[in-house]
Length: 352
Image (cartoon, rainbow, N blue to C red):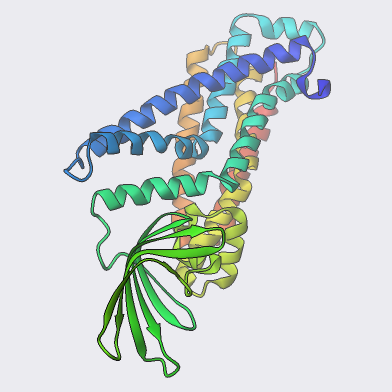
């Protein structure tokens, strides 16, 4: 463990960078929450009240933190290392035998821990949390019409449902059960369905038998033709899928447009940790190079301008990839190559 934590000098560098990341992260959390909440206030209605808007904006924070993690770390490193340089600690660190490379490694440690944690959350709880938050908002705002739901088929039924707040719940279900001649045998309307272990149960179901016109009701009913994981991968938005689920969805998808979206999201999530590290190394180069006439505020301005510029370039490339003008892999890698090239140029620019 000592090899990772480092000695007292390296721990001081890591602590400064960590505090810088915390400052930037806190600022982004507050701004993101305020902007989201102000935007949601205009949509408040009888069904979507003040508390709903507040908690929706609050639950957006984890997704925003992960999305902007690269830029948070970039600015955090600028603050941490910049403060070390302005306070004269950088000179003392070098006098004590620490090279630029060792200082860089020490500054990478807190960011690396956060990147690994973010990647783990992205593959476990974050997609379902975002899905649940967005679907519940749309339901309460009554923004999901009968044409906006999801359809899927099985060997014995054609099914429609309005929304899926999470992986264990489905709302407003219509099931058209088929007979051996592919005619409709009966229709089942259900308020919702919940998944317990591997079994789906329909709640408050109304069953209409087409052959004799009879109608019955059931409080709970086992859903034999319930959607499988494969079905859900075809239905859910790419941002609600983990890397493993995206791989399966790409193999099963036949629509070229959706396949491009899925592939773009796959490469974006795979390369997110690498792009984050490249941005951190670039941020360090702004501190180590011959910029004695630049104070901390100027370095932060440089970092902000570069971060926003890169974000615009990434969005442009991703839009081109969605409409098939550019390969999804190229749309993700090209901005990273640009960052790497700029980093090499800046690091070779007369380090101090």
